[in-house]
Length: 342
Image (cartoon, rainbow, N blue to C red; front, side):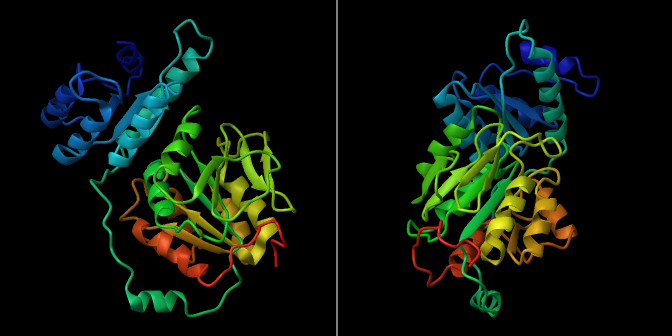
C-alpha cells in the first residue's frame, strides 16, 4: 500500500495492478502487460526470485526488486532475481516520519520510470569465440596486464558474475570493480559473487595492497581508486555526475598508476558514467573492452564509450572472461604492488 501511494503521487505513473503473491504476479503480468513491475522478494506462495524467472519466460518485463538491505536473505534473493532477469534492486523507503522519506520516494519513482523504458532480454547468448577471432585479438603483443578495472550499473551484477566465473582461481591480476547498487547491498553482492567464482571477492579497504586472484568492490558511497604503491585508495570526494562510487574516478585513478598495463572493462548500465575515465585510460596507453549491445541489459554506458571512440574491443558478455584470460596468458602470479607502470 505504501509503494502504491508513492507511485500514485507521480503524474507519469499509473498503478494498473497489485499482486498478493508471486504466483498472482506472474498471472497479472501476463494479462495486464505493464511497462514495469516492482517486486518484493519475500512473498507467500512464490517468492520474488521464482516470480521473476517465470515472468521473464511468460511476458518479459522490466522488473525492479524492492528489498531491505538489512536482511542478508533479502539481499541474496534480490541478487538471484537480478541474475534471473530483474534490472535493478532498490531499498525499501524508510518510515514516512523519516526525514529521508521524501527524497527516497522521489528517487524510487525516478528509477521506476527509467526502468520502464528498458528493453529486457530473456537470457544472454553464449557464442563461443572463434579461433580466427581469437588469433586476430592476439595478433599484436602488448604490455603485461597488472590491473583490471571494471564498471557496471543496471544489469551489472549478473554480468559481473558471469565474467568473474569465467576467470580461473589463478588469475594473475587484481580486479577493481565499481558496481552501482543500492546502499546496503554491496556486502551481499560480495558474498554472492564469492559463492560463484574461484577468485577472492571482498569490499575494498583503504590502504590494503592489491593482490592477484582478488576482486575489490567499491564500498557504499566511496570512490574507489589506487595509489602509487598499488594499494586501495578510497575517497569521499563529491559524486561525479551523480555517482559515488564513480567509474570515471576508478578509471582515471588506475590509468595514472598503471598506464599501459591496465585493462578497463565497461559493462551494461544506464547513462555515461566511466566514459571520461576511459579517455584517460586510452591516453595512458591502456586497453578498453566493452560489453556489446546484444548481451547488455541496458546498452547505455558501453554505447557511450563506443561513441566516444575509446573502446578497443566490443564483446558479448560470454567472451569477456576469455579475452581477459588471453591478455594474461603466460603471466606469472606476482604481487601487484611491485612497479605497476612497468
